[in-house]
Amino acid sequence: MSAEADALPVGIGVCDCLTPLGDAAATHAALLAGRRALEMRPVLGRDGGDAVPLALCAPMDETIPPRWLPDLRRLVARIPGDAWGTAARPVIITSSNFGVGSLHAFTRDRDSRHLRHGPPFACVEMLQREFGWGDHILLLSHACVSAQHGLLQAARLLHGGAAGRVLVVTFDFVSPFVAGGFSSLKILNAGWPAPYAVRESGSIGLGDGAAFAVLTREGGAFRLAAHALHNEMFHFTGNRPNGAGFDAIAAAIAGAAQGRRVWVKGHGTGTLEAGRLEAEAFARALPDAPLVSWKGSLGHTLGSCGLVELAITLAALRAGRVPGTVGSTAPCFTDNVALADFAAGEFDGVVLDSNAFGGAHAATLLTHD
Amino acid sequence: MAMPDDLALRLKKLIVETLRLKDVRPEDIRDDEPLFGNTRFDLDSIDALELVLRLEKEFGLKIGTSEESRRALASVATLAEFIRQRGAGPRA
Image 1 (tube, rainbow over the protein chains, first blue to last red):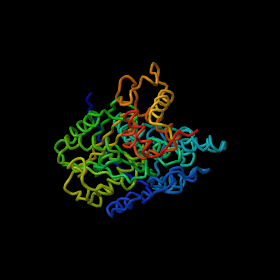
Image 2: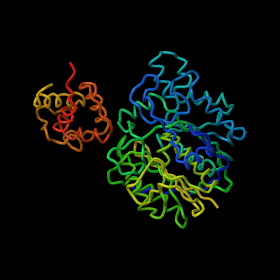
Image 3: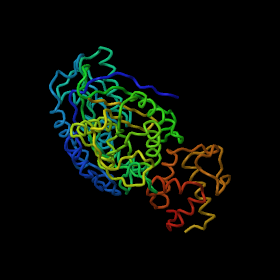
Image 4: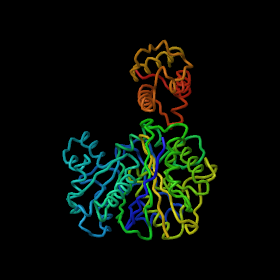
């Protein structure tokens, strides 16, 4: 099965993120300094459990209102006011979690107030009221490619003439329910994540993250030039062992990047098989492109990772320096993995790759002058 | 602690029961038969997850990583060896 990139260039107006290390600029600076946001914490929060790497903005309790609301308020305050939620200015909200942790808290505490922000629609309605957005809101959840899928949908709205500007907002905050699930799969364990490193055991970290981008029809200094989606349709949690899914997405976005000097902001969570398959696919498709992952510091921000890491990528381009693969040491699966930071000025494009449960892959080509 | 043969049979019964394997009798599973990637059982990672959680509860042991899980669950023999090495026994 082959994938092809959609050439739907859009401009990036404003874009920023929030991680436990701060906004995009602060997070970028911390990554350059090799700082790790992850800390060993009990997997079930106040209920204890094994210590696993989590990067949290606040203690992982299911509070009323939810613990993530103050963080989202701070982030949304940076979005320029523009009558968001109208037909011409729709909002796309993406997440893989929404308030799922609160649903779990409801089953535990039987406090119905958790339901006000537990189900995705209730969660989005709460945000709509909180931020004064209109009714033109698209809600999108597609596991860990959610945010990149949201960017593609925004580009389609803009190119179809259905909107003049689109606000894409994403957020995923870790809950005991989600951390417990990944812990049960044994990929969230007592080890620190080391993306693309050859090790005996793989491990991921989970992190809080939120971000937004305002996309426009007009081009700017930074553009999302092409988008590709692909689904292996192979298995809930596994990829085709021969790497065909990774090859398909890498080839599609490499085709769109032809003639450009690019680096790759990879997905790289720290699992062994998917990390190897991703690194090998990009080594084949874009052999001269350095590959980095920042999840060894930030953890995996799940459905939001595509936009959180886009914001950090923009901060890297503005600062002229790209953080390396924090948390990893040689040997790596392939020679294209960049462990150390490098100069951004040698390149005129970036490929952003995300992968998800269900065999979903998404890649975006970011170009700049 | 159960004798090795008893442990193997107990594990086979646990596998059939936990994963609701149809048309498979515990005694028909060979000790060295691959559990995963075997078309006779058609098990996947979600089955592995269920099995690991049941084993941890049943034997009071801890499987640390997905790679350790994969090695332990290769066959009934490797699983029994994994349990014996940790000195874990079935809980009443």
